[in-house]
Amino acid sequence: MTFATPSPSTPLPPTDSTLWTPARVLVTRSAYELPHGSDIVARCEAAGVTDIELLSGDRLPSLRADNDRAAYALAKRTLAVVVAPPSKRRLQPIPPSADWRIDLAQGCPAHCQYCYLAGSLSGPPITRVYANLPEILAEMDQHVGRGTVTSASPDRADEGTTFEASCYTDPLALEHLTGSLSATITHVGTHQWGAPVGLRFTTKYDGVAPLLDLPHHGRTRVRVSVNAHEVAARFEGGTAKLPQRISALRHLALAGYRVGLTIAPIMPIPQWRESYRRLLLDVNAALADVPAVDLTVECITHRFTPNSKDVLLDWYPRTKLDMDESARSRKIGKYGAPKYVYPKDTMAELRSWFDAELGATVPMARVLYWT
Ligand code: SF4
Image 1 (spheres, rainbow, N blue to C red):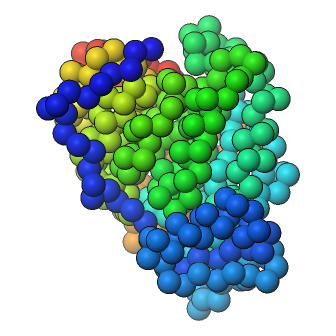
Image 2: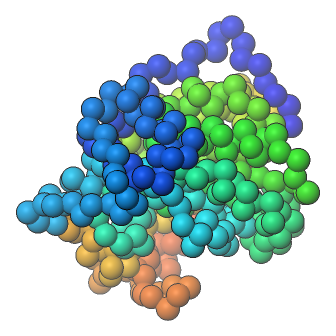
């Protein structure tokens, strides 16, 4: 992989990135005793957080609120610094994205009305960041050279053993408060591995400046989560605006990162072809002059489960998100739970349009999967 040097005409990375400031930070005793935990506390202080509570033990206090909505709002404003227990450090396969899932945190400060985390995490959605990062990273070595997703795919073997860091969080959303993502990218880029390794994560944030000069050595693929402008503006509260995300994608590509698009969740909104075409044109305009850009695309259509629908309607009771079961096909998921996806004909129409349009509008893109 070649490392491109930004030309003098390259615009500087945005300095007004969308950065979350928690209203309250809770720090467990064990987390604070670890160097990375106390470093996170210092970063939170530097970010202007004034309500930082060092707990006397390792249990988080329950959040007192009058109702579910208030509990949700309080949790979303709270960051907890904790130690990931062994069960959370155990790496799991994560098809179709990667061989293994690696969690640097759990939870996300954004307010997407279709959030993938709804229904998969229990309790109020406090964002928990892990202070025992060295222990988490140490788990990777024993998984290198093993895996059933990208490692077993002839088309994706060039990615090495892959580790996905955005299953239960948006790691870039928290980077200014933790530094965990930069440490992980640097570790993956500089550690002596027994076989090729690839780190991957996806984000709806744009604060990429701290990542640009890291020794990533082409081993990290950053995907930017994008959508039709109408979907992003209506349903993705608290995230960076779409043009800023696309600008971040350009800066990452110029810094030699492998990059990607996570187009998700795809929705057949009115005039969806025009809306998604505009998105793809914007992406192409941002990347067309980047030398040797390595761009992949992952396409994920909107889906929901009975459980995620209940949780989302609690969190966003006035949402306009379409979750009408009668207009969907019911499928049984991997663990036996039902999920609602678009009917076969709609899926086929979306898929054939995206296949053709990606080829025509973003010719350097390589589609990894459609679901
Ligand atoms: S950015 Fe991702 S994890 Fe965060 S709220 Fe949105 S969908 Fe959920």
